[in-house]
Image (cartoon, rainbow, N blue to C red; front, side, top):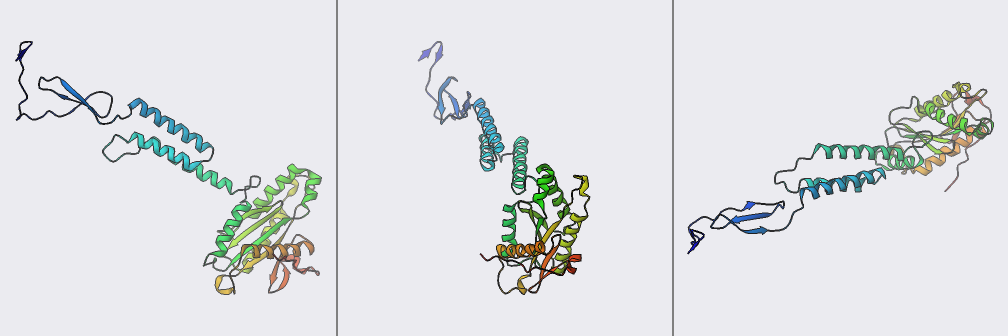
Length: 311
């Protein structure tokens, strides 16, 4: 049979079938030439998104990730970045190479997450650690099998007559006093030690891995720095001192039972009462069961016994 001057013959059974050839914007749109070299049919296994649509989806995921990160929802932000990366790599058969853009985004989210976590553990006024962090660290330090060698000391610090500071000089000066006291307390702390705001004008020095005598010396040095500071630079005629109650928990092998953070804090609070009632501006501690004052305050005649509350 002849059509338009060409003889039309059937397909040669021995002829090898032509391979599929890609056509169109779809990833799986293919045509196979017929026996006359013309497209015979189009095979579409399933549609894949157009490149423009993919780019739009990637941009959408990135925008959502940025929004979630600004709200502190780090896990959800990471998931959207991951979805964007999967879209970019969807049509690749070789192992995906993570684009530098996504590496930077993930690194940025990690940094922001670390910064947000650090801020969540800090007191907004003094930049010392907050009560939440203090509670978590004390549980970890006192419930581990190996409490730091030489034990753990807690020094509960309270500003003397701080209400009078606020009443006389105003709360703005009071805030500056709190900030400066924290700086003085933290100055010269041993490795691993930290300062946390316990509440109001009370702070806790956590001193892991030091013996009792060293802890007493550290607390007395902190008290002395506050007393000797030139507070007149903050406000004329301003003078600030602190009282400290020091409780020391011995290492595991020297204890009869496991310690609890609340128990040690109660002991420090009771000794703070001793320092306050014995004239203030002093460090109080126990020598066995006997209350003592450190440094020059040891010469005071009247030392009030600690008032330790029971749960």
